[in-house]
Image 1: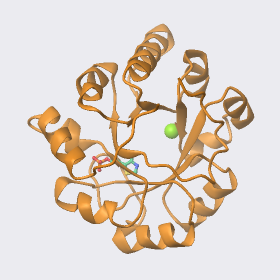
Image 2 (image 1 turned 120 degrees about the vertical axis):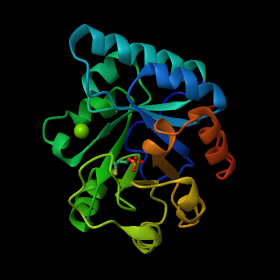
Image 3 (image 1 turned 90 degrees about the vertical axis):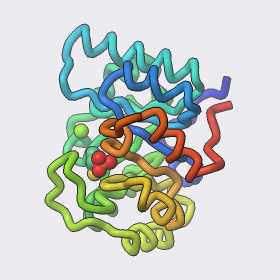
Image 4 (image 1 turned 180 degrees about the vertical axis):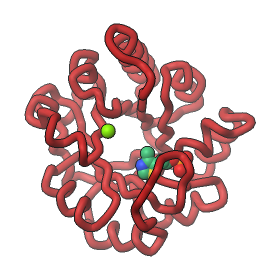
Amino acid sequence: SQPFATCVGGNQAETLGLYPIVDSSEWLKRLLPLGITTAQLRVKHLQGQALKQEIQTAVALAKHYRCRLFINDYWQEAIAAGAYGVHLGQEDIASADLVAIAQAGLRLGVSNHCHWEMARGKTLRPSYLACGPVFATQTKAMPWVPHGLAGLRYWSQSLPGQTLVAIGGIKQSNLSAVAATGVSGVALISEITAAQNPEQATRQLMAMMPGNACLQ
Ligand code: TZP
Ligand code: MG
């Protein structure tokens, strides 16, 4: 299998594709067999040994299905489990050891909600910059003005070669327009996890974003 590049691979755009964010390895068991190529484990309800175990289970599943799995927040547990990457918010940066993450060979994704954060996020040279919210969302309190499609186009044109991930309020009805802005990945929570039939919703969303590639 391909060795993981360090998190400073930020000047090399890659296609991340449809990027579901879920809160348990149970979700990954349901979604990864469908061919998901990038996913995030965003656990907010576990700690200690249970958290470590959940991250290890998720990483093992991701390796089995050759999916790029980013672990939200828990960078130490992600390093210990040999995860593909870590996803951090700007508020997490000060307390995270970015050098340790890079030296362990993990990728880094960073959340960005406004121009100021995009500028700061860019200086970290992450594997991808997440731009959100694209549209209004109920999933997480978002006191920022949504980037909108025009904002996403602006970022993809002004940061050529930078891997960008769109997030926030993305649904089947707007996915094609979001993908057409030139972003490398499209992250979604509720459109998948709150769907009546999450597997069917995922298949339909994937079909709208062809060309997803698994790790070799
Ligand atoms: N960061 C920016 S928007 C968002 C996060 C975590 C929530 C996205 O959830 P949804 O349900 O896809 O709008
Ligand atoms: Mg965080």
